[in-house]
Image 1 (cartoon, one colour):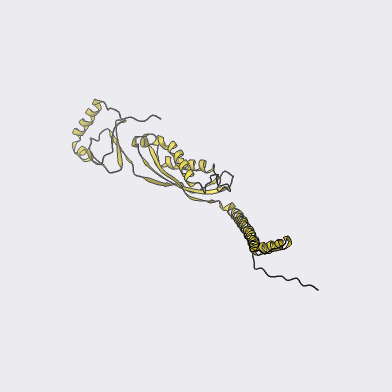
Image 2 (cartoon, rainbow, N blue to C red):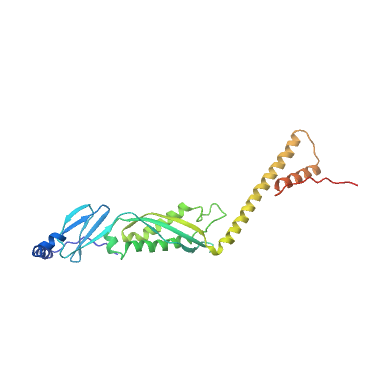
Length: 260
């Protein structure tokens, strides 16, 4: 859509405005004052043509006849996209919520190109959120693969860039688009919790076993260094007993063989 340019108002239209102003002077003097606050812009439309854009704070006198005034706020706005359930890259439903910070940088586009700039940003933010979240898994075993949990900066950047592209037509600059809530949907949360606990147990076991092997190796090497010779059978028993003690969940008990 082409931008709406500031247009010249024909002289005869101004003559009509001023004639009405003189004819209805008391009313004109009462309604001709326009106040522009900081972080605001006022679009003056005269007989259907964009005549002025006033964005400097102050008090202005404009003959109101034939003119309409549209105030556009350029303050920073924060909007919540509301929680929504989205399928991630692996097809798992996740509940996602996000916040968007933006402000109007072109009041003309914000007023003439869209019906409601705030609704326009919110609807597009929800669409972008669904599109981007579906490109990533919730979490990944491979550290090199980005996921929603460990690649927040990458996801944030992609969200903001895509939303900027969509709302540029509305004269809006997006400064932040970040996830505020992220978790598995209730229908699969319990199953995913069990899976996470199982994975954590496996990882812990790997750590314990690797540490036990290093301890056993160090013990046998220490015996050899001190000149204590052990046979292969005795070394195997020592390794077995140490591994049993180190890797066991509970307390270990000594067992002595009884010979008849």
